[in-house]
Image 1 (cartoon, rainbow, N blue to C red):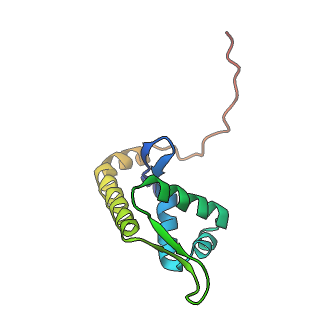
Image 2 (spheres, rainbow, N blue to C red):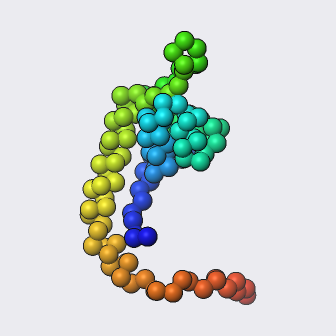
Image 3 (cartoon, rainbow, N blue to C red):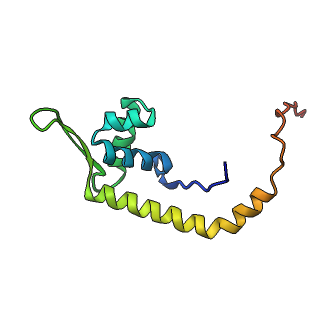
Length: 126
């Protein structure tokens, strides 16, 4: 697997966005539901719901809206703000990867070909 840069934006305590939440938003956009998105990502409905609740509470506008089942079948969808959030996050990711490309290449060339040995626990004496 080639090296890759992953990006997490921390806004403050318990307020962040990163690759997992963005994949969840894309999956909701594709599946049209939180449960379908969770299944597609191998994530429990509860975990997916908690992440969406966290995102909705993090910003002044909702990221995802939900509708109860019934005549229209219920589901979830990204709000216009949610779509914009995803677009801006992906743009930051692309620009950061471009800016870091030569540095990541240097790090990759510097890697050992052997997997690291098991870390040995050493006791530090006082």
